[in-house]
Image 1 (tube, one colour):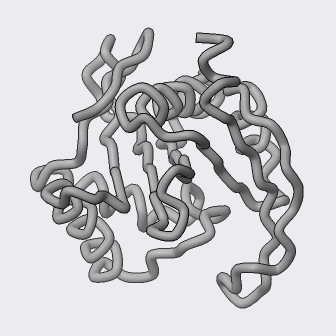
Image 2: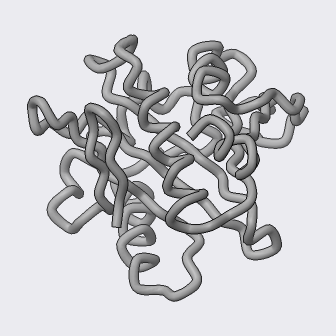
Amino acid sequence: MGFTTARLSAREIEEHDLAWYQDFHLTPELTQYMVFSFETLESTKQFFYQGIEDQAKPERSLYQFAVRDDSTGNIIGIGLLGIRPHEPESVEVGYVIFKQYWGQGYATEITKGLHGFVFSTLGKHRAWGKCDEHNPASARVMEKSGMQFEGVTREHVFLRGKWRNSKVYSLLEHEWAETN
């Protein structure tokens, strides 16, 4: 299961992805704005294997995609989808890109690919995402991907010693259908 875009192919994570996945999630520069944090190799492994285990479940709560640049074959980042049991028609969209690929439009392309997966493959009603209020690059990615700003969720996450605010964005299925 996965998705493709003009330059990228995404597939679900596999056992052999653990090495780059750990490097990725334990790089503070890449994860500084994430609302969850992996402080140890063990916590990173747990999240990785949760993604692998979820692949066998009929009712999924987590999708983790390894995203590859088709021109080089290199893994450039990860796309994530989260589904909460009490909101099964609303899917949280997330992404992280290795630093050497920043500023090339990949995050927006991944986000658009995730939208297609949410609406076309999963048949859901709403895709949404959040970013730290001090992360304007991520806010721009969501806006460029067609998501609309909904507001700020104030001090809802305590991370790395302080309370964090998040900007929240969303895209509805009918809005996505109008442009695709």
